[in-house]
Image 1 (cartoon, rainbow, N blue to C red):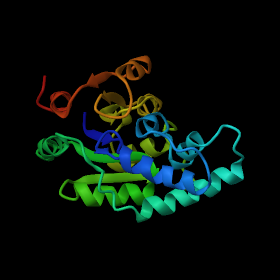
Image 2: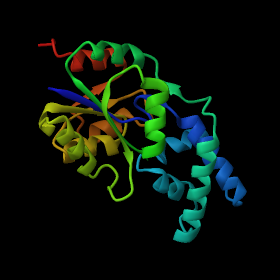
Image 3: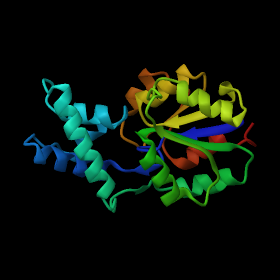
Image 4: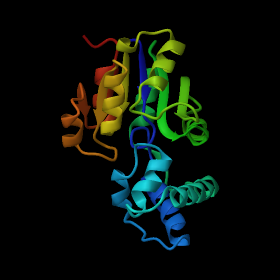
Length: 218
């Protein structure tokens, strides 16, 4: 294996609280019911527009969804993100990986602007060669287009790449891109969900993840 690509939210960073608080603020402004923070674990994963749709009543029309979505983006952009931080052990993992020849990347359904900002904020000391959030004109995960783009930019075959994430969307992305999938249990979803999707590996902590990624492991 020659590269590792990570999901961002729920995998590298715990951003649940800030996402939930910002969306709840947007919902409140429009007179909609707010949700408990834990409920957002099942709203997140398919991009901010789908997050908005999931947080709103099912009968909400497209125009109203877009209004709430745009307001959420404004609130999230202005947020100081004091509750967002890398998970315990992530810096240890990335430091270990920095001493290998494995290329590193990030592929997220978070808007590209925010994905780049969080990578720069927390992981500027690490050599992430490819950092991609959701962009206009490129379908979100689990569509494999962006994953294939990363493999092409790495000049590495997809089957020589690990894709690491915490949700069914991530496991589906890996399968669709013919990458080796690793599901993590410290994120937003359950072991049962990752097992149902057929994750190649499931790990409980970054040390266990390192033991899989470690190129010297036989």
